[in-house]
Amino acid sequence: MSESESNHISAEGTKILESESWSGPLDHDNKVNSAKESYADRWDEFLVLSCLINSDLVGKSVVNVGVGHGKEAELLLSKGAGSVVLVDIAPGQLKSALIRKYQHGLDNLELVRCDAERLCFKDHTFDIGFIKMALHHFPNHCSAISEVFRVADKVVFIDIMNCSLTKFLNKLGLFRVEWNGSEPNRLKIEEVEKIFAHHRRNLTISYYFVPPYYGDSVALLSIIERMSRIVNTMLPRSHTLSRIFGNVAIISG
Image (cartoon, rainbow, N blue to C red; front, side):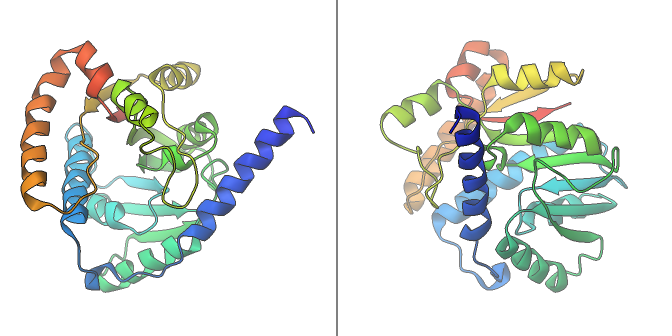
């Protein structure tokens, strides 16, 4: 077996694992959030809203790839998107999104099961392609990003970067495996720059320090959030600090 065949099987195995891991359906309206989940929700909303500041979203068509439960899609619609097509490879995620669609009356939300690396849409179908915290689940970044470039005129990605902080935590044995057993495929800035240059897209990237905390101490979370706000005021002014602490990035083009 060649190395390319082995990598192909490994990639397909990852896709099967991702597809089957999300059992669903989950009624998010009746789910009690812990302190750590509320903390994650606040960061999610902050990052999504931050990437919309310079984006003319009103009336635009959006393809939202790889975030199957529909929370981000609902936020995009609430901020003026004309329509959102949510794409996910996991049937369980789409079942959860369907519950959200009916409970919240999201008439302009469409759900499609599809592989992010082989999107089932024609060229330039959408105004905006949006991926949040899903690229590190995809085996091939180049294929997935290229597909979003193909179907959307503008792209916005939010994901975890392979900065010095991420590498250090990985060396300590932290965050090396996802909850379902898959290994995260972290984004590298050199890789992103190469993909954007190949497609002749202008690259805009903003780094954020999102402390990876998974405990339930409200007091500690409050301290962590205050600390992160201080660090995030410095990141835009320092290339060095961005490369060290910028573990999450908003990438657009």
